[in-house]
Image (cartoon, rainbow, N blue to C red; front, top):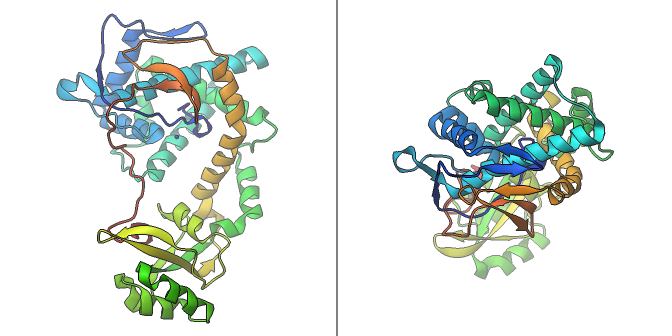
Length: 362
């Protein structure tokens, strides 16, 4: 997105609302059961504590706000939480049975709790959510059983990551080494854009082929207000919430060369958006650290995807219909999902463009 570690995120589909029934049979994964009472207590804690709700929403990309009378929550959120519990339980069981370890020491628990806090903080920042307290406050606000379960699952996930040959252990030394090997991926990037009418695309392309500069092209062809300054939209460092999309738009692009056009909506009509990197400056590790950690986690997520799916495929899972359905998603694999009802908007903004579809460059 999810298992509470980033590598085990599963995006769930569907919306609507479910109430909680005292008669619910709860959730069972490989014989380990979360009772209806415990599940409802956890959901109540999430929906009634705004700080905890903020961080859980960031982790799962679902809105956990309660409905009328605090009696209901969005069904996608309910099933998302059920999925987190199931994934955490099955991963913990897998590690325990295959490696014969447990995570009972104070040091192990402290390390897992610190990792969980860091992940929650990063998730909130990545999704541009300003939570009213710290991630540590959010964890402390959890019911004791919920907190212990998530910390145990976090410890198991970290252990499993370190055992996979294709993953990068999340240590400071390894993260710095990854940064050194990919240092150009964290340049601070200055960009210029041009929003061009379809009728002018051929002329724009011809002018660029004939050697017109980025500034000249923007001033002559762009309908965006940035045209007056040669299309300049400023510079973006790895600390910017829009950095990943800016980096993606300019990857492998020569300086002062516009990219292939993207179709965008501008004033209700379709236009072509061109993006150019005009300057790249190396960013010190201290400033790029969060972006590097995110990239390493994504590398690990890809590496761990297969084993995660294998664990879930083999799991014996039972979910009360009030909390969602256990099934196979062709894209994400096995997991809990909400019934297909009219969709609602995710709590996490997708970072789309503004009227000119250039918001990410503002």
